[in-house]
Image (cartoon, helix red, strand yellow):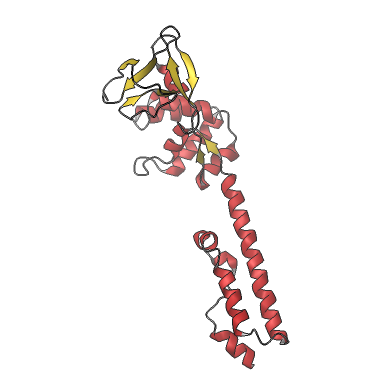
Length: 231
C-alpha cells in the first residue's frame, strides 16, 4: 500500500459507497455530505497537486457529487409526479389497515375502473366501512381513471385542495353559516358578524363550503362566492 493510500484510508469518508445504498432521507436531507468529503480530501492532500493518485481521488469525489445531485433531481421529479386525488380518495386509500388493507382498497378502485360498482357501492357500504355517498363519489372518480393511475396510489399521492365557496343571499347580502357545535344534524343560520371576505372567521362557525357540500344542502338559492387562497 502506498503512502497516499494509507493516508486516504485514515479519512473517515465513504466516497466509494454506492448511492443506491443511501436511503432517500439521507440522500435528500444531507446536502453537504459529499461536499464535506471533498473538502476533507483537499485539506489532507492540498500540497500533493502533482500526485496522480490524488487527482484520481479528486475526480472520483467530484463524480459522486454530480451523481448525488442527479439523484436528488430525480427524486424531486418523482415527488412532483405523484397523482393528485380528491380528498375522499385520499381518505379511503389511507384508511384503517385493520379494517381493510391498503392493497384491498386499491384493488376495489381497480375493479371500479372496469365498471364494477359492487365493491364501492354495495359491499363496503353494507359493511359500514364507507357511507353510500362516499362509495358513489369514489366510484364516479375511479371510472374516469386508468389502471396505471390507480396503481400509482400505492407509492403515494397528493390530495387536491377543494375549491371553497361562501353562500351569499342575493337579496340581503347575508352569508349562510353552519353551526359546527351541533354534530347530530346540520343547523344553518344567517351570519351577522364580520364580513368573511375581509375578516378572519373563527372555527366555531362554518361559512365556507365545498361544491359537494352545497349539492347536498337544501338551503335554497344563494350566490356562490369563491374563497380565495389563503382565506
